[in-house]
Length: 201
Image (cartoon, rainbow, N blue to C red; front, side, top):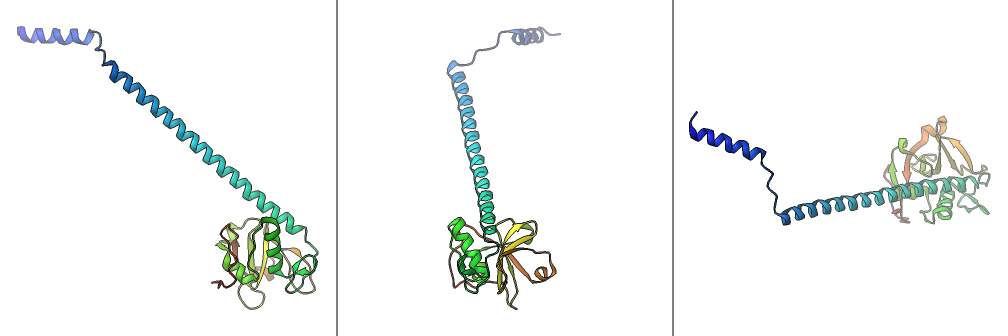
């Protein structure tokens, strides 16, 4: 083995066992500071995410509470007689007058007056997406969206059916209603009172 190769190998071996070089203290402090800042940033992000998740949960509870209140309020009018053009328990209700009164009293939201206008002003949803408080529409007068009720869950809805009848709960699965089902809608905070809106089937 050449003399120079031996010297090179010895130098490498002693370097491997030598004490490690100490980095510039300023670099070290800067590195530690960056890591701490990253951790604080992560913590801030986690806190923000936590706040958002709480707000979403609160909103979900609020929506569920609102739907429950709607259904409970609607059930309080069981037995009120049907009256064409009726808007109150004192005078009686027609179908859209009933829905309008329930939403105004429970949520403080004024829906359009007629069933077809209510369909036009609300958000289209699939029948499978129905939740308590949503609106269900039927073709009972040989025209689309001529009848409306409020979905209460379990395939049932509450409505003011027709002259001589009273506000009652019915099963959407019954052949009469199943054949005439016209669509499901959801009332949102953007639902307006545009009485000139035209509904599309």
